[in-house]
Length: 81
Image (cartoon, rainbow, N blue to C red; front, side, top):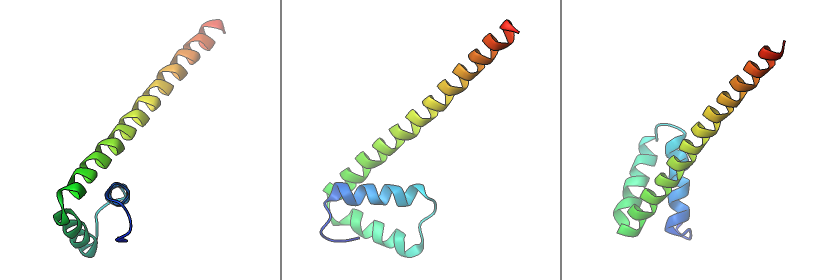
């Protein structure tokens, strides 16, 4: 990762990489090294993962809400037929 990026930005990049699947051995080493550099990096990664998880939760809630609305609309349509 570029040294010029602030820890929050680097953490967001790591979260995206982690979300896409298993890291390569090289990536795991890079992440481990970055996390060991200082506590700020570890805190930034924890925060970025929490935000990412909240987006996943929100997406699930939206999807669930959409399914409920569609079912209710279908029931209304069927009741009028």
